[in-house]
Amino acid sequence: MCHGSSAESAVVLAGVTVRYLGLTQPALADVTCTLACGQRTALIGPNGGGKSTLLKALVGLVPLTHGRITVLGAAAAPGNPAVAYVPQRSDVDWRFPITAAGVALMGRDVHLRWPRWPRRADRATAMAALDLVGMTAYGDRHIAALSGGQQQRVFLARALAQQAALLLLDEPFTGVDTATEALIFDLIDQHCATGGTVIVATHDLASVSAHFDQVLLVQQQIIAYGQPDQVLQPELLAEAYGGPLALFHRPATNLVPESPGRLR
View (tube, rainbow, N blue to C red):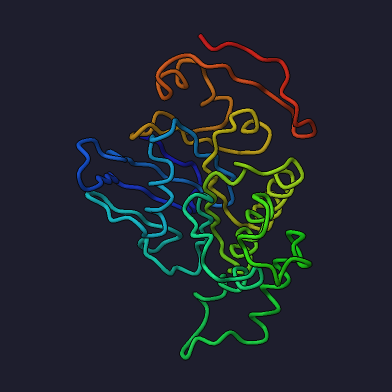
């Protein structure tokens, strides 16, 4: 169990359990936690530990077996304009016939009223988001024709075009180059500096201390929640990952791991 210290909460999880059909073990089990607004939170844990399930539950994409979730004061549900979600690249159908500009414009869908045709202002917002991630010149390209890093930038543009208070990013650094990684971190910082909140599922433990305010360590249940130096402890990581592992620390200005240490 974990509790945030802020009076204003971005996310409140109360006894959240998610069990997928046909599986004996729950993906999440009795998760109770409060995440404060304005924070950069890293969601870490092993593969299959429930990170992606938790993010999907926050946007109402998976049903809860038990418990409840409150996001920015409202029950978690699909179509909440205040919550933008960037899935893992493996969850995207790259055969879908859409351009980079079209993907960015999808971020405006939750704001459209009947007959749901985007207005000039919506198109301008989408193009501004594409420009922010450096993808304006690729707006007419099919999304499948882009590199992995470019695809990630475009989906980040879709999230930015939504102008949501809460950004949920699922493994955004997988398969991207260092320039794209640096851009993502910069946009995360900018979003939180203006009052937004970001939750990022990541396997890159080396970047956590430099780039995040809080860390949520999960393995079906919450192992720990707190500041990076409180959570990135050998015994907590070993409990979550099933044994000791090597952890590399690196400063924000240097993407090359240094000072490797062995957890015991």
